[in-house]
Image (cartoon, rainbow, N blue to C red):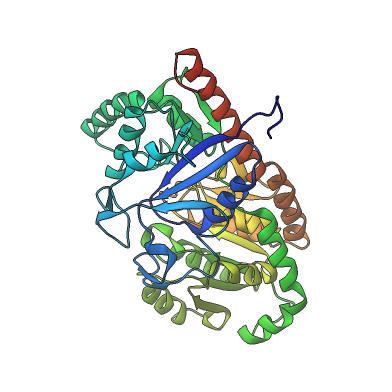
Length: 414
């Protein structure tokens, strides 16, 4: 028998394109929250098995469980895909699924990941038809790319319509909050739900890798006395590993430093990058290691001295969170969305102007100065104490409480 003053859980529906490895642990944590009754609706489940990832250019099968520890439904589809886009997949059953609720009880709120696809529009319209408040979350920011004037006008019109379908937004960081304020207005409810990873998971696996560090160093032919620069991301043009490679070659040619460069990842640029490396004077110190699964990355974090993400048009860059959780300093371009929130210039890393190879070279030289990377890495780890799943859950609770009160005040059902 329930206690008289017991507060029931808020019944939350979460709609997302497909199982995402970065989100799986967060969903498991939410499922354990005493104040939230979570049910996830996936528009597709293609990522739960091996699939061809266009960005990596290889078959990917994630080695972390994506579908355990929480309740979910995979919606039926008319158009399947292994690469989600605005019009793929096209799923159905949103209205019926949201109407069904949890154990026969209606949902209190619908949280939709993203806002610009056929499926997200369908989910929002279904929620509104049922009188349910809607939250959305994305990683967009205003400066991510240039657009023609007519496109900006069309986007403003789109957001005027979106504002009628959404009751609040979950901002993943400073730039994303600015984006929402720009398009939705200063009075629109914005809740800070930072883009986070499972910090303890990555920190723990990195610590476990330390006793076996010598094995990996021997496997890769690395001198333990020399520093290591790490890149771990897709080898796509916009990720600009080529900028890092050029900065590395400049560093080796103009300073007395002799670090290794480890390139973890695969993709369309790999052949060109390998050719450039092979024709350089420092080819013997550059390693191309291919795609590595999520649980393998901490082994490379452990033996590295600095992590670099030189990307252009990078909405956030969760790999930066992972590297910081492993106590690494980080160097990122000004186009990496995480830079405003996660990089303190000269303290735990550096932000350099995107595309500025000499500036990247200078940042590498400063980070690899004796003792600097260890000190900066400790700052990285401390910073993530306030950028974690706990902040995510707190923000979600605040959003649920606010929109539930608003719904009651306007005559909605409890």
